[in-house]
Image (tube, rainbow, N blue to C red):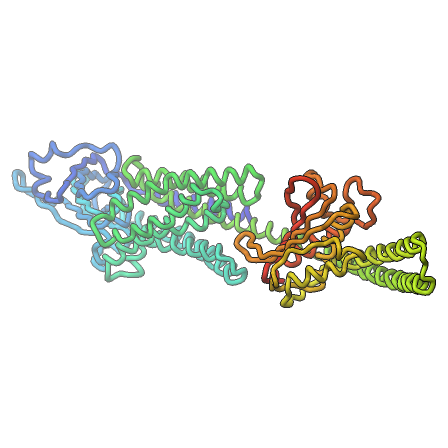
Length: 635
């Protein structure tokens, strides 16, 4: 595909060389008419000869409100009818003054021929996109012609003298070349419209709009709007050029901003692209005022640094190893080579020539193809990434199914184990209570042994309950089942659910009620584990406090349960670790437990959109706070 593309570009360039024909005019001189008051009589008067200054090249005065008079000499190699071509096609008002035969000493007489895109196309003597005038040269003697030029576009004029047959052959090749250009542009446009309709990606819509606007712009630049589209309204065709020139500056911004990865995290670049998009649209109002030349000059000056930024960003992508970066770099360099000299020519800074005018069109077309290749490369990379992601997702599904089977087996094992443990534990606990009731031991040692047996049974039951709770909160299918709850009532219920004797050691500071929404079973597990943790790690005779209060956190209302104990506390270095699985407090190996209590509290808090945290405390002991929002976390 790349070889075929290169072949088309070579064909375009080779075909363009066929247009280099005709004879240049000689002795060009320029008179600037600032206020447009000069006439053919005043510029041909004897005293006017010294007011003309010679030109080393064709006229290029940039954007100006002045009228320009050109004086030049034509000396054909053979007599007969010749055609004088004046390019480019977008000049507004052209008046050619051809000298007529006159007797010696008589006042010079001239035949005036008018052209330019302010004249209806039907009035043109020769049906061609630019101004072409017939001139009769009966001999090979040199003759002096005058050309008056006034335009709101950039004031440039390139003149060549042709024999009719040679010009018609060159024009036929030229129209074939331009037809090929528009055909390829239309292909790119249709291709991206199909991408847009298929992928629903706004980028392809912006790129299609960019290509369409460029095609409509060059239809005016090449004179086809007046020749084929709007033949009876030359002023509308003239504004068409200005409108799409501004629009082309603007439409390129979202395309290249996306392709060059300019996002909001690069503020000055993002602002530059925004200015490129918005400013030309605002300047469109100048089309209906006398400020058009100033507005278009401002837009051209804006585009010069923007094009340099394009090259710099594309170079960065290429250096980063992105495959589309190479195409973007080639396209941006090519368009810079064509656009920067042309824009300097349009501003009147660089002399330029007719090829410079066409170079923008050729290089812009190459750039469009380069961007299209970058889009295709990006699509291929995206498609490969999508296939890779699908493969990873498929592997993840397989792993999930395998892990799901393992988890189901794990849950079944835990359920079986807890059933097998709880039944004998219940029998043991019941038997101990019956023995204690029947024997009614009087000595304290026997009663203490009975209580130790029951406490041991209670600890085993607690461990089993923690493993069951851990298995439940780690299940990905778990969903919080919210209901209207009372935070104070849950706190009191948690105290009653703690180990034997805890009720006398726990003090609760709470209002009458604190309504909120949450999963009653899960919140109860969290509060019981907070209290159990505080009771286990506190001396047997110490008190544990619980404060229940309404608390706002980061602007969100909620309920907080704060538990104070009298233990050794938790070092700040291990604050994050104590909420992990199977983590035990330091230097507390004698305390029973599986290291799951605070892990369960953290998981339950996360499921509700809340948080559990350790607070700083002066003196002895630890302070842990569970905070849950008033409304449950969206699932």
